[in-house]
Amino acid sequence: MRCPYCGHEDSQVKDSRPTEDGAAIRRRRQCEDCGARFTTFERIQLREVGVLKAGGGREPFDREKLMRSVQIACRKRPIDGARIERLVSGIQRQLETSGENEVKASQIGAMVMEALKGFDNVAYIRFASVYRDFTEAKDFEEFAATISEAAHQNGS
Image (tube, rainbow, N blue to C red; front, side, top):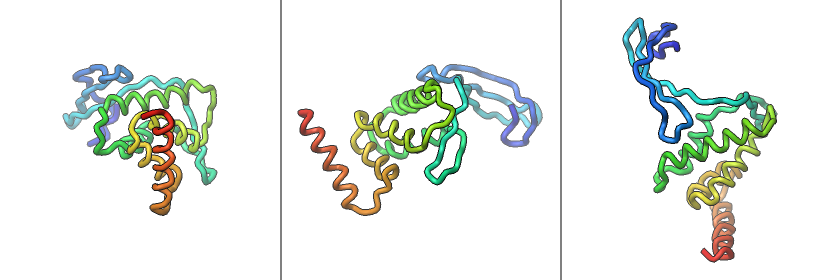
């Protein structure tokens, strides 16, 4: 593993342990050249999935990008980090086991929306504001009203 500080090619694993959800291995490493310590995460990847962007571009699926967007939606909400990790891992697993080599970015957004729907209404609205490109306050109001109506119909 290349050192992020000096670029040396070799590092030594000092400690390995599973993450809380067991979906990855956390490894503490030390560079053999400069002695700097850093952490890496090792995850199972079933297949490479490409993402088709709305503008026609393509890029590889980036789990960290998905994680950041969900974390932003959940910021300052009483949501355990392990639940967010499970949500992102679940979406990644669905993508990797779908059999598709490419998936539209809008499909990933819809998967996140569906997962957040039962997760936290505020996080759901925050994510929707970016995913659906809300431009005015009335966009928020209309979307929030649909959530309130659905909750009322479900007896919540």
